[in-house]
Image (cartoon, rainbow, N blue to C red; front, side, top):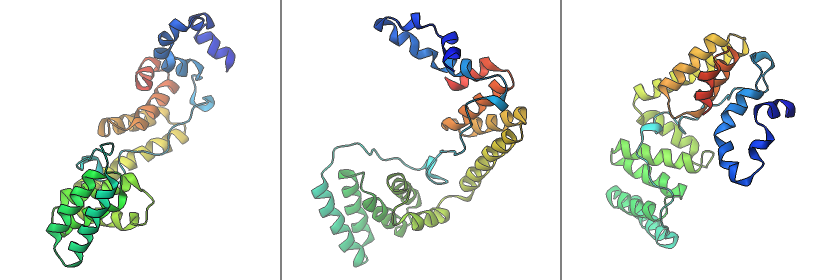
Length: 225
């Protein structure tokens, strides 16, 4: 591996500190250089998990900035006020209080869950999905995660859920074809994944591996870049 790496990039290229940034664009080329031409012996392996979104439908849900200024003390006070309003059946007041709390502390998963519930009670499905997805982003294995996923199944349009399932099936088909040494067919499957989910890095990575394995290295380099 070391000799292969040396053949791709001479150490003279990085001898001077001022040339470090000239080396960075060659990382993808190094990957191809050290990767043998046949998939059966390549050192890299495909990604086996597709991370398009935390749950079907979440890729289109409204997003909240999780890095804004925070006031945790006031957020807790507002969240408590929201809980009191929810207990007496005033979901509008509860939603307003939770929304203000979420703005002050967008990283609190419990506030996200409570706001989602209040939105759901008020039949604002899109807003509810956005908060439930935020909860899963913050706490994918949290106490309410199972309940949130079951609620999303009801709230997310069936078309979006079906499209997400079809995308996952295509991704798994590509992996099956790779494991069966059918690299041309696997490349076509991952090409479809890239087309349907252009923000998912795993599709590009796997397609790049398949293209390198069948000798299409120029296209493979573009995928790795």
